[in-house]
Image 1: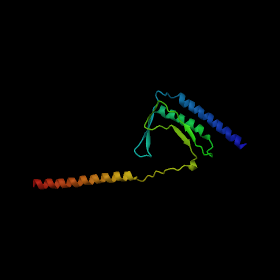
Image 2 (image 1 turned 90 degrees about the vertical axis):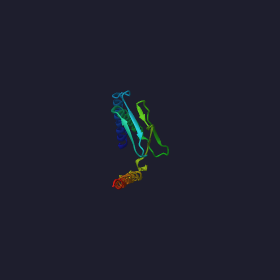
Image 3 (image 1 turned 30 degrees about the vertical axis):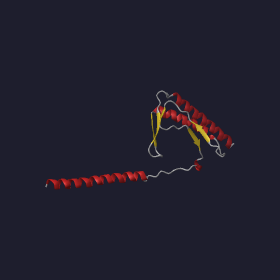
Image 4 (image 1 turned 135 degrees about the vertical axis):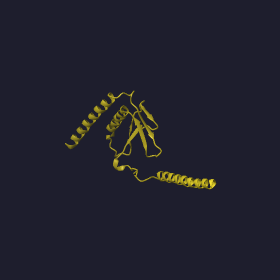
Length: 149
């Protein structure tokens, strides 16, 4: 009985998702949509530029992918869900596929709030330039003072 109710709930969920997808796709023009994903200098950072239409159409693609994520991951073959590339997409990076993973099996890289090596080097370098400039200004002022008097 529980198994039947579970499958019925999943079917209702899929129907609701399909209605939302249809609504998002019908209410947003692909001519007006824009979404661009860019890589930042840090390999773990990136950003997107988008308008409302582009975000909603991309959300529709992700919802379509979520419908396809019901595959059982007990076998060794990965579930790769292809996303459609659209003319309203731009940028340096494209998300062309999503691999379904078991949340318990993925290794995540924890990004700490502590400064990174590059951030520390940049800070020390800026401080060094300020100190060098301050010392140079003092030496220059003393030299000018000695030259005048």
